[in-house]
Length: 81
Image 1 (cartoon, one colour):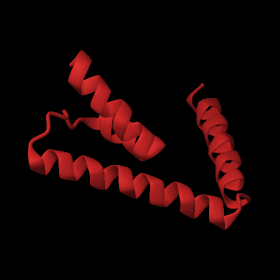
Image 2 (cartoon, one colour):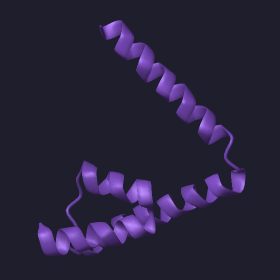
Image 3 (spheres, helix red, strand yellow):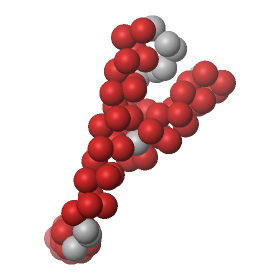
């Protein structure tokens, strides 16, 4: 059973890698820059003492969505946590 799951996960990983490699370089760079700016905003807010809780979910949200993810994290930590 574990062998089947590993084969399926490997196949999914290969498909995702192929999809990423076939994306235009300009789009990939735009996503990378957006993620870097989001992380820089998180670091600046943490340095200034603005109340953003840094955990794996908040960092993952910011890396995945970039600047909009940062603002979502800011809203979540300000009003919910």
